[in-house]
Length: 237
Image (cartoon, one colour):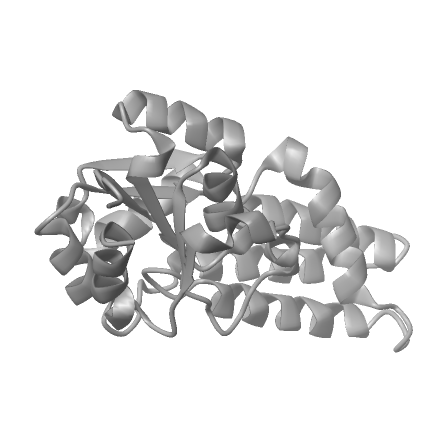
C-alpha cells in the first residue's frame, strides 16, 4: 500500500480561477496594439516570446506580464505607441491584481475532506504580494499546514520542499492543473500526481513531458469532487 503522508495543492486554476483573467487582459492588449499595426503583426506570439525571454528576469505573475506587455508594445509598434496607450496597458495589469478570488466548484469541500485525514500544503508560484493576497481572500489559508510561494516549480524546488517537510517523494501527492509545473517534476522525483485539467492553460504551461514510465503514479480527474476517492485509490494502489 502507498504510505501517503502529505498532499500538496497548486493554487491558480486548481483552487480558483486565474487564467481567464490573463486571457482577457491579453485580448485587450491585442486590441490596443491593433490600432498601430496590420493583421500580420501576430501580437500574441510576439508577446509570448518576450514573456518567455523575461521569465528569468521578472519571474511569473502579473507584474512580469505587465513589463513584458510594455516591452512588446514598444517593439511591435516600433516605438509609435503613445503614452496614453502605455498607460492603458498598465491599467490592465492593475485590473488583474484586483480581480476577485473565485473558488472552483467543489474545491473547498474536497480540500476539507482531504485535510481531515492528511496534512495538506499549498505550493504556488508567482508574485509574492499577489499570491499572498489571493490566498488570504480565498478564505482557505487555515486548511493548509504550510503555504509555499516559490519562484519556480521544478525538480530542485520540490526536492527542497520535501526535504523540509521530512517527506519521501513516494509519500507525497501533488494536485494541480499544470502537467509542467505541478505533476511532471513530482513524478520525476518518485512522487504521485493528480492532474485536474482546467479549461484554459497558458501556452508556457503546456510544454510538459511526462514519461510513460511514470503513468502508474499519475491520475487524471474531471473535477475536484473526484479527489477524495482518487486519493483513497492511491493509498490502496
